[in-house]
Structure formats: structure tokens, C-alpha cells
View (tube, rainbow, N blue to C red):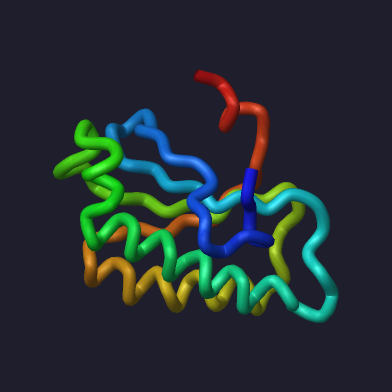
Length: 113
């Protein structure tokens, strides 16, 4: 799985229990103390927003057409506060485009299908 280390790739695409198009950014392990993931996360979020808003997601997955889009930052260990604040700020802008950003812990339920 690409994760934040590969900001140009989409990690996971699914339909969630509410019927939303769910695009997940996965981060496993500890976050660096120097915040080095922030730049890659910014780039990865841009990749995800373009994928969803410019039509590539629907081209690849036609069944997701017209579905609300949710981009989830999924993590094993809670991100540093500054990373969460960045995510919250970006969520406000993404909402104007009809995209919901969430952040939540990665657990076993993610992998059940």
C-alpha cells in the first residue's frame, strides 16, 4: 500500500456503509518528531482531491458517480496536533467543493468486507 510515503498514489477506494465514496489515506507506525510527513500529506491530499473532483474516480469506478466523497486520514498512532490542525483547516476548504475530510484511528473494522 502506497501510504503517505507515496503522495502521488491513491491508497484505498471503497464505498462506506453510508454509500459515500470513501478514499482513505493510510499512515501506519509512528509519526516523525520533525513533522516531515506534512509536506507529503499535503501533496497526497491534493492528489486525492484532484482524483475525486476532476472525474478520474468516476471514470475508474462508475458506480461512485453522484456519491458524496469522503477522504479519510487513517492512522495507527494519533498524528501530532499540528497535523490534525492542518487537516481541520483543509476540511473547511474541501467542504466548499462538496468533499468531507475526516481523521480516525485505523483498526480491524477497516479491513472487514
